[in-house]
Amino acid sequence: MSWLSNVFKLSPAGINWPRAVMFLDAALVPLLVFWAIGHEQYLFSALFGLLFAGLADPGGGYGHRASHIAVFALIGTGVTALGFGIGADAWGWLVLAAFMVTLVAGLAAAFGVHRFVAALLLNLWFIVTLGLASSFHQHARITSYTWAQVLAWAGGSALWIAVTFLAWLIRGREDRPQPVAELPGDTSRRKLTGPMVMFAVIRAMAIGGTVALAFGLNLSHGYWMPIAAMVAMKPSLGQSTLVAAQRLAGTLIGAVAAALLLLVPASEHGLRLFAVERGLEVVALVLLMHGAAIRFYNYALYCAAIAAGVLVLVDLPQPSDYAAEGYRVLWTLCGVGTGLIVIMLAGLLAKRTATSSPRSV
Image (cartoon, rainbow, N blue to C red; front, side, top):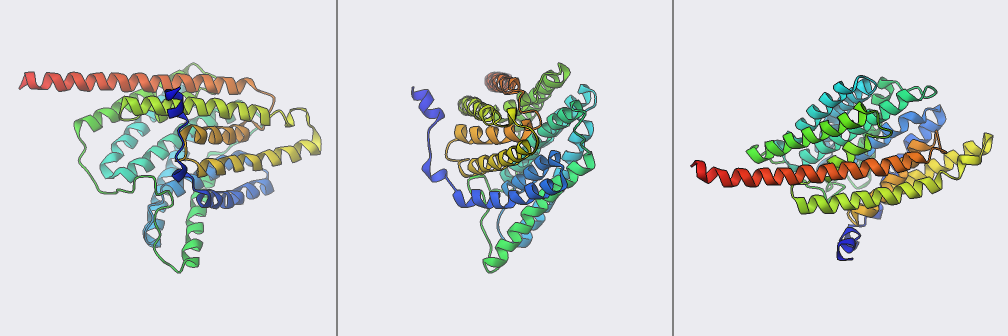
């Protein structure tokens, strides 16, 4: 029971409703735009571009903020183009690309903790793009163009720059702290040490391995495995175990909630089905808004809100495929298990290296 209480331990100071409402207000813009043009398959890229640009916002003077977000968005467009461009290719290319992107993201620690976190966000987005591209390729009635996905990502990032510009004008052009104050803001460069490089290589190998399993075996919704493994791999085994348990619990709760919500349109047709689907898209945004509010309140509840919102948006084209939720929970379990095993082996390797070093001297 004490272990379970740690998984669902609450931190009341971690709730931030103003930040969540700001995200919801901005997210309604791409939602209405894609409703109008009838291409909801690009909504994900726009929402992730908006959300991740906000997370990568360093705060400070507006010129400083805009330039850093623009660089982040530019790198993100390249990652988006790569992921959607090769998502339907042979799985070997996906493994190689996932390894290289994860390795580069891990080595970004040399540019400061804040930029390291930004690199991890882009790393996570790359795995998502591979899964989305593969899913779109398997559905003949859904057409997705790489250039349009890139444009949607860039548009979402640019929307955050525009929102912060309006907020800067309204507040009298004063400097502002970074929107997500709980994330590290350190941008000071540091020298890459042997353990840092080793951890980056181990993470890259683990993500490459899970991508190989997911796409090489053509597992249904298998890309949830490398996502879960990436989230679970923390510097310490204790931290990894807690985060893995929270991730798994949140995914299970979110999957159940999404399955219940997707029962609503399963028996509807025609105009009523159209209205129900638009309503569920709004519900998904509200769930994502709650995730933005409680990210540092409790990670398990945050994962539940995000998973439910994402699953509703992903599964609306096929609301009767409830087996998909079970597959996602299964691959999440495999992913967090892989992450824990990798961290455990890395810890044993570090201890062995530390004990053998004095003998060699």
